[in-house]
Structure formats: structure tokens, C-alpha cells
Image (cartoon, rainbow, N blue to C red; front, side, top):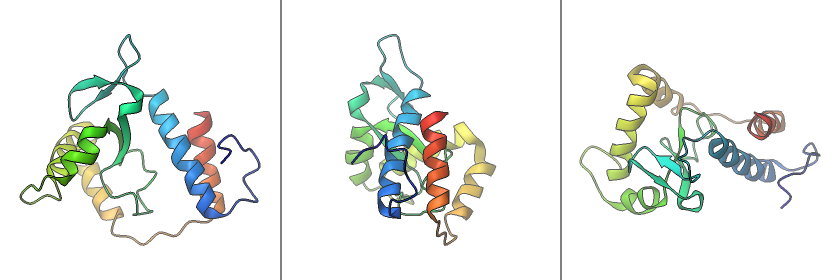
Length: 142
């Protein structure tokens, strides 16, 4: 897939989502907190990690379209936390990863915005091509 494709109008929504996911990651990497070696800070593991070892992690599952590209809902997180810690069960949370993510997110955006994000996740959102093209262009050029 050509992620640099500028002719987005003719693409189906499924391809636009893939392109948008790609540019969201690139956007987050460009704006990430990095050390002098270019490693990216993981706020959950509290350490710097190489780019290939970080995932775009969604607090509200990425399948929830209303919050999928919300910058309050996504962070670059260590692959270990996103993949393995998400399999460790934790009381009152989906996983250890989700418990730690919520604490970091609450510190970053505040409890009010976190609650707004949770409310937004309960809505059923269906977006057209224009929405995805707008998001792609934002993530690509900001």
C-alpha cells in the first residue's frame, strides 16, 4: 500500500483507515518525547525505547471509531506493555496494561477529559471518506 498516496478520494474507507493508522503513528513519533539517542519515552514503563519497540496504544479499544483517532485516547507505549501486560488480568480493569494506562492518562489529560473520553466511547460513530481524509492530512502534515 502506498501510504504517501495523495489521491485519497478514490480509495475505499478500509484503505483510508489503514493510511490513517500509518500517519497517526508517524504523527505520534514526530511529536514524541525522545532522548538524545532518538529513543521514545514510554510513560507506562517509564523508560526510553527504540521506535520499533513502541506501539500506538489505544486506551479505548481501537475498534471504537468515535475515539480511534482521538489524540487523548492514543499514546506510544512499549510493545511489552501493549502486548504482554494486556494479557495479565487485574481486578476492576480489563488488564494490568489498562490499569497502568488509565493512571498515566489521568495524569496527562485529567479526570474530566478521561470521563468525557469514556462517554464518547459509548456513542456509535460512522464516518465517511471526508473524515478519514481530513485526519490523514492532519497527521501527515502537522
